[in-house]
Amino acid sequence: GAVVSQHPSWVICKSGTSVKIECRSLDFQATTMFWYRQFPKQSLMLMATSNEGSKATYEQGVEKDKFLINHASLTLSTLTVTSAHPEDSSFYICSARIRLGLRNEQFFGPGTRLTVL
Amino acid sequence: GIQVEQSPPDLILQEGANSTLRCNFSDSVNNLQWFHQNPWGQLINLFYIPSGTKQNGRLSATTVATERYSLLYISSSQTTDSGVYFCAVERGFGNEKLTFGTGTRLTIIP
Image (tube, rainbow over all chains, first blue to last red; front, side):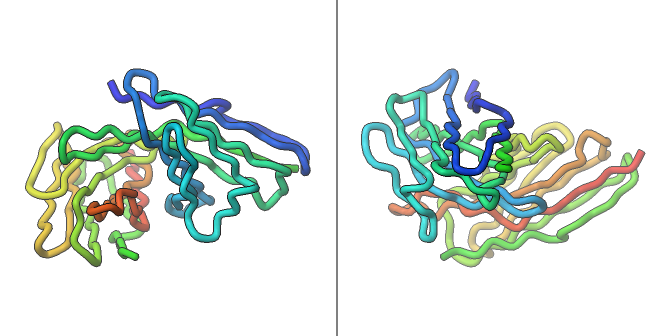
């Protein structure tokens, strides 16, 4: 149980194009999902919290107009990198939260490696 | 915000060796998770352990919440244990997002 998928697993695009990444919870419903970014040999940095049916909450320094998040259902959140530039190249990872009483546990997707040429 | 430091940053061991990874955090937490990031980038949940001790096969973890640290023990290391180990904490009480530690890169040599 608690499987999270991401699609695509890798993408190469030209500068100026937009890229959409999907995150799905396969065997549970997730009212809250999270998007992270990871640079080589660094830790994960939280970009935004995605709440089903409402606007995402972005971390300080993350441009909400560049990284559009939509959480349209209890099993799907999408991240769209708009007008991508080479500095947006990174490893993007989503997670979904399971809440059982006081227990909050996050499960992670396999990540999407974005390369912008 | 809360600070999460892990040590050592890098560890190289022979197959069969045991290891202890440490996670220190700067404030009280409601949640602590340990993850293994494999060479392909996938984070695998190892333990949900805001306090106490848990064991799962060759791995065990202990969190002493009052002293703000957690330890991950790996016994009889195998090459498949290689990768980066992260601890992540959540403060709770309306601040329900994980803050990741700096990570420990473990390399197991055959």
